[in-house]
Structure formats: C-alpha cells, structure tokens
Length: 389
Image (cartoon, rainbow, N blue to C red):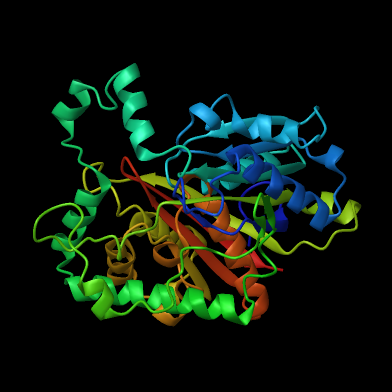
C-alpha cells in the first residue's frame, strides 16, 4: 500500500524529551527554541547516517511564529547547526497539526519527484513564547479574528470548544478524568521500562543533558483530578488535568524515496501509506480526527480493526473520547504509551512527535499498520497512515 507516486519511506525519527512550558520550572527554560529544533535535525541525520548534503528541503511546523520562533525558524535552526546551506527550508502553521502537515508536505514532495530527501519537523517553546505573548502580539497587530469572520462563525477558545464536545457526546467528568489517569499511567510505565529511550535525543542545558519527559505525574488518580476546578466555565468538565499540558519540545522525521534509501544502503523503517487534512466546524473545532480517520479508512479500503496502533493527540480528553465513540477502536491499541495529557503538547511539534512514537511502538511490538490523527484549532483535522517495513 502507498499513496500515489513514488513510495515514500521513513528512515529515521526522533524527538526531544518534552519539558514543562514554564519560564522558571521548565527544564528547557534556558534553551532557545531554535536549539531544540537543531538538536532533532542533527539527531535524525547522525542516527540515520545520511550525508547532510543529501537533504534537499526542511519543513518545520511552528504555531507561534514570532519573537524567538519567528523569521523562519526552520531555516535559522538549520543554519545555526552548521548544516549545508543548499537545503531549502520553510516554517508552516496548521496549528496543532503543523508538524504532521510538515510530514505530509514532505511526503507529497517526495512522491511527486520534487525532492528525494526531506526532513519534516516541528518545534514549540511555550515557556518562552507564551499564550500571553500571543495575545499581546495579536493586540498589537490587529484582532486575531475579523468581525466578518465572527459574523459567520461564533468562534470561542479551545477550552470552551472542548466543553461543547463534552456536552454534545454526553461525557461525564469521570469519563474524561479516567482517560487522563490512563494517560499518566501508560506514560509512566513507558518511561520506567525504557520504551522512550530509542526515540529521545538528549538536549544540552545549563543543568546538564535532558532525556526524560517532565510532565508525567505517576500518582495521578481520579481523586486528585476530581479536586481540580473547571478551567473554562463554571460547572464545566474540562480542567488542567484532563487537557494537554503547556510544553516545550521538538521532533523530526527523515523521509526519502524508497529508491534513494536503496541507493544509500539504508533500511526503510516505514512507508507513508496515505495522509490527509480536513476541515470541520470551526466553533466546536476539535472533532477533526473523526472525519480524518474516516477518510483514511475509506480510501484504504480498511476497517478500524485492521489498524494495529493509534496515536490520537490528547489535546483534551473529549477529543479522544468522541473519536473513540464514533470509530469504536480497541482502546488497548490507542495511545499505548500515554499522550499529551501526561507527556505534554508542544503545539507545532506534536505531529512529528506522535509519528516518532508510533514508529517505535510498531517496531517494539512487532506491529504493521498505525494511524496518527490530530485535532487543530480553527476546525481542522490531520491523519497519517503508516506501515512498518
């Protein structure tokens, strides 16, 4: 199985550990976002053994593209690492799905013969470029949403959108907190077993190298989560415990044409079978994984039972709950090493992180077919179907 055009294979994928997005307590508080991104660039190149001069293009996702993350961070991170100047680079924004879309764009370029070797990546340093900074920038340069847009769509913040999904599908607070408890337990188990070691590349900080995700809380229980107050509205179900964490991190995936991998004597690890991005209601905005997954199943002529492992981004617990309600997967196949409620969600990098984790899960568990899907602000969804080789 493969998408139209040349076969596109994943040769390497890596990520940083994920730090808390806190200016004082985050492990990456003193690390520039370009340093996070350049670390994973170097990581996929060195681990794969691909000569850096063979990389023709670099595509990186980043949501908050201003300040330290502005001026095409995909390119500046590449150059500061001393990598060959002949590679092109661009930074893209598809909100939370940015890095997954970077992988999609890279795969499309390779399948279409535009490039042979492309790095798709993503970065977000939410501790140094905060939501407050975003609001100030929007105020300085104009409203984020024009009056014409708001006349058509009564757009709210994502937390309220998550509340709408919770109400629409009839989930209880306990339903959501159960998913959060599960996420922390699985992420902790994966950390303690060493399951994340292969995918993480160390980041040098003034306090020493960081190789361990910072946001996991091993003692998370229904009791501890039940004590948290609703974050977005009185009497609501969404809290800091059943939503993704504000985080810092980067991830990268090295893709190439199958014949290029053969030429370089490299072992392809996975095939990009198919990919898509879709639009959905911009008000509830977070149900994009439902139609994106449906598109993958329909186009591939497969059933949900045919997919061995899923990575569904845990932006908010009701996103996963609604997706599961509609598609009825075996939940033992979903987010088997935890998700963003435990690990964190560095916006622009999470898509590449999910693909990196899925690749390693498929290899470690000797499985074949995996799906990554994400919701994105503005009413968007992304999906990538991966086949381990």
